[in-house]
Every structure is written in structure tokens, then in C-alpha cells.
Image (cartoon, rainbow, N blue to C red):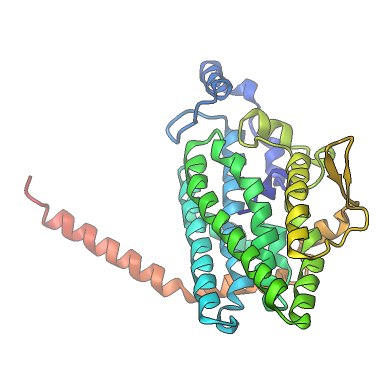
Length: 338
């Protein structure tokens, strides 16, 4: 769902082999494919820096999908109606599926799923900062669908044209499903704002107040501080800058808020006819980096839940490995006649 990894590079990225040291003929062929807009496929030669950048971004995206199941999954047993429970169950299941698509895409780059998950559980790998905030009321579920999934779609549609083929193809299906998630979230809020009690309407406004600024942070730091974006854009991994995506999101969301009848919590938010865009207030980037560095409201809870799931699921992995080994032995001992 969420690709802040461009701006959260690990230190080893600085020591990646420079392009000049790679075989020149392969490098020229790679550059020509990028310039033509062709896909790079798993068996194609690629610079080590490109491969590492993709592993970092795709794995963070996968981790975010899986961790992102937790805030809304918290409300499955407390959904107000059977209809809302069924919708939420389907959405959370979708997010788990997105994680599987993305882990599979990352594996085509020569890294195992176990390595990816262990990097998450050790704290080496990151996931989107947005999932380190609590879901305090049912309205949070709708606002996550509207704002968080809306921001995710804005981020992810350009990834359908990412230069790495497996990632781009996975994103096509993910974006279709995320679009549904955004619409159902918005519809849920619309029902509460049009048919709900004064208390329910206040609950929606409170949720909007809490999620608006974290949603804007989902696009990553400003372009002036995004030191890795230029290279990623040159490689065709990233297609649109952080600030452009953030502005596009604000421009699309303000009219939706007006239809809902909620107020976005920004006194500086206003239409600028000269720019043809909405102006908005300064973002508290210190709060963003505090959450990224593990000091958000729910960082510890989220990681504790993922570690517990990994430990409690060990027997499933062991059983699957034993079954696969048994099947391989049987195939070797009793090969099928040609």
C-alpha cells in the first residue's frame, strides 16, 4: 500500500557498487531498456543498486500490507452490522493477499521470504508510518478507507508503470482492490454523516482530525529532503515526486470532504487560483520521523503482534516443509512414467 522506502534507505545503500564498475555492455543494455520504457524482468541483468532498492521498496510495501491488517482487524468483532463486518473481513483479507503478491515479487530478486520477514521482525526493515496510529472508534475504519487507502492509491497507480515487471504487474490488481477499499470507506462515512446521530457525526469529524496529517505524511518527506528519489526516478522505479503526489491528493480530497460535510483540520487550507491548486499548512515532520524511528503510539504493539504471529505460526511452516520434503522423496522414489 505504502512506499516510503525511497526515503528510508538503509546505510548499506551508500556502499552499493557504482554503475561505472558494472560490465559496460550490460549497463548500456539496461539503460536502453529504461529509456525505452521497457520492463526489467527477473532474469535480466540489473545494477546491484537497482536490485537492492527494489528489495527495500517492495518488502516495505509487503510489510505495510500485512501490518496494515492490524488496525482495522481490531474492529472485525465490533462492526456495527453484519454487512459492515462482511465488508471489513473482505478488506482485511485483501490486504493479506496484497502482502503475498508483493513478497512473491520481491523473491524474484533473489531474496527469500524468511529473510524479508526476519528483517521486519528485527527492526531492520520498515513499514509505513501510518499503521502506528490507533483506531479508537468505528469511524476510524471509514476514515482509513477514505484517506489512508486514498493516499495509497495516489502513491500506487504510478507503480503500475514501474520499470520492474513483477512489481508493476502485481500493482495492477492491488490498485483495483485498493480503489474498492477507498470507495467503501467513503460510503461508510457518508452514511454516518447523512443518517447518523450528532454523536456519530462528531465521531467522524474526530477521526478526520486525527488521520488527516498522518495521511499527508504517507507520501514521504518533501522533495528537497528526499535524497534518493532522483536515482529511483532515473531507474523508473518511482514515476512521480513526493510533493506532486501529496498535492494531487489534497486537490482530490478537499471536494470529497465538502460533500461529506467534514472539516479538514488545516486553517491554512484554501484554493489558490494562481497555482490552480489548494494551499495547505506546514506538516510536522518531527512527528513523522518520531514514528518512523519507533516512537509512535502503536509501534511496539504492531511489532509485538507480528512477532507473536510469526512464533505461533511456526508449526504451520514446519508442517508445510515436512509435507514438501515427503512429496519430493516420493517423487524421487516413484517417478511418474513418461
